[in-house]
Length: 159
Image (cartoon, rainbow, N blue to C red; front, side):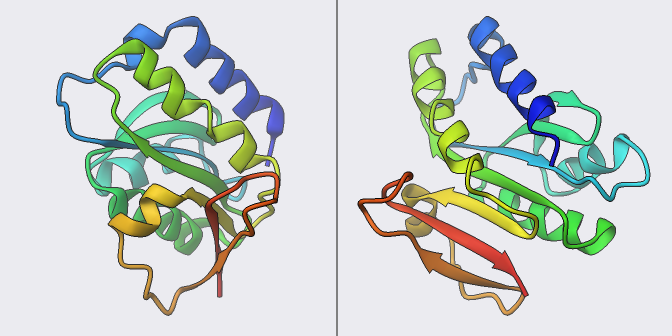
């Protein structure tokens, strides 16, 4: 994954957090992902749209998208892997985003989740593990120990 593209995307969120605020007071799931095997830059956005998400920011095949349903964020990762290969990696977090400070607090988790991710992995925060059925034969789930870099998170690995 091109860390520079994702770092740029996340830096842009800091610059304009207000544009990422949502009106709905229900939790929002944010997905930061890149699909280096995509044939063109529009393929990741197409996967997001098909799963009911909204692309907030995009840089080549890297993007930040939001979903009202956390399972759809994981579904986007799986869809991109099916379309482009096992090189897809990313991170997903969930939180309330109806005020700028809540958006910042939620998105601040993404860099730590993305740091250890390797191709074929999606790192998710603990909130998502309680909101989504993770019994899927397309990936394995590994809980990360509390003393690690990203406490209370899980790693999903493509099979």
